[in-house]
Image 1 (spheres, rainbow over the protein chains, first blue to last red):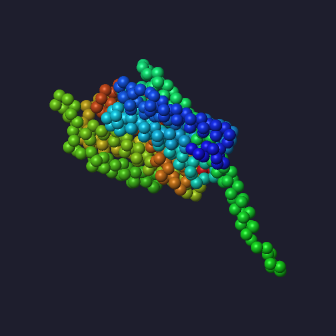
Image 2 (cartoon, rainbow over the protein chains, first blue to last red):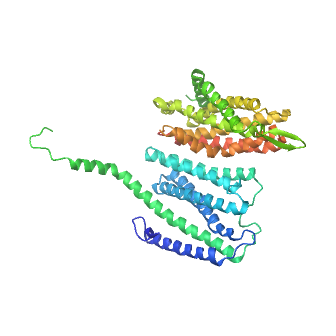
Image 3 (tube, helix red, strand yellow):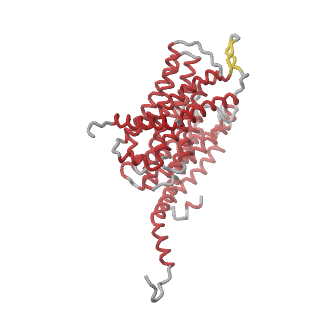
Length: 249
Length: 241
C-alpha cells in the first residue's frame, strides 16, 4: 500500500483516495470482525459477506462497467484515454472476480457443506471470469495497436452483453436458490447491515484507487510504446562513430 | 454491380465456402469422425452399467440420461474445428483482404461464412444425434411433437454457435495464437447455448415438450442477437484483419 504515497503513478488525488481506502479498510476490519455480532443462521460465516458481495459489485458492475463504457466511447471517438480505461477496468475486474469466486467457495463450505454448488451466481461468475480472461488475451494480441484496440473494444461491448445473457440463462437453469442478498426480506441486524454497506464503500474506494494506478501505468506503457522505436533508432544512430576522413559515403 | 445486395453477397461467400468443402472434404473426413470419436470418449467416461432410478421400478442408463447434453458438447467441440477451418482457408494468401477488395459487403461476408459453418454444423449435428441414439441406447417414446422440438433445438442451437463463433473467429483472424484464442473466447460465450440446448433436448427426449419450447425461444433470440451483432460489427472486425 505504500505505493500510494510514492511512485510515478500516484498523484495528490490518488494519495487521498489511497489513504481513505486504507482507513476505510481498517474500519471495515474492526466493524466486520470485532464489533458486529454473528448472524442468527450463518453465525460467523456471515462476515464473509462484507467482502464477498462488495468485491462482486466492484468486479461485475464497476470494473466491467468501466470496460463497457470505455469500449463504447473508444469506438466512437478513438480516444486513447478510454481505450486504456477499458483495459484497466477489465484487469481489475478479473482480479476482483477471482476474489469473489474464492470467497464464494469459502462461504459455500459452511453454508452448503460443499465448496462448489451449482448456484446460479457462482456458475455465472465463473463463466464471466473466463469471458474477461478472453478479453485480456485479446488485449495481448500481437497486432497493430489501433487494430487491437478496436477489436478489444468490440469484445468489451459484447462481453458485457454476455455477462447479462450468462447471468439470466444460469438463473433460469437453476431457479431454486437464494435471490438477491439485499432487498428481499432483509432482516439484518443494524451493525451487520452497516458492515455490509461499509464493505461496499471500502471496495469502491479500493477499486477507484487501483483503477487510477492501473490506468496511469497503461498510459506510461502506451507512451513508451509510441516513443520506444524512435528512441531505439536514435540511440543506434548515436552509437555510430563519425566517418573517417576520406571514407567513401 | 447495382443489383448486388447483402443477401447475394452472402450467397456468394456461402457457395464459395461449401465449394471449398466439397473439394477438400475436411469437415466430412475430419470433423465428423472427430465428433463420433468424442461420443465414444463420453462412453468411456460414463460407465455403461450406471443407471438412474426413475421410480416405479423403472430406470435408465446414465449414458442415455445425459445424452442430450453430450450431443451439444460434441457439436460445440466440432464447431471449434469447423470455425478454425472456416477462417483457416481465409488466412492464407490474404484472401480475407481479397474478399474485401472484391467489394463484398462485410455483412454479406459474415452471413455467408456463418451460413456455411451452420450448414456444416447441421450435418455434424445429424451425425452426432444419430450416433448418440446408437451408442447410448436412448429409448424415446417418439411423437411428432418430440421430433419437431428436437430438430428445432438442433437448428436454433447450431445457428447460435455459427453466428457467435464466426464473430469471434474473425476477431482472432490472422493471428498466430488464433487456434488457442478462439476456444477461450467462444466457449464461455456459448455456455448459455449449451445450457439451453441441453434443457430443450432433454425435454424433447424424456420430458414434457412444453418445457422445451421456452429454451428454444431463448436459443433463437441468442442466434438472432449474434446475427445482428455480426452484421453491424463485421466491417470493423475485417478492417486490417
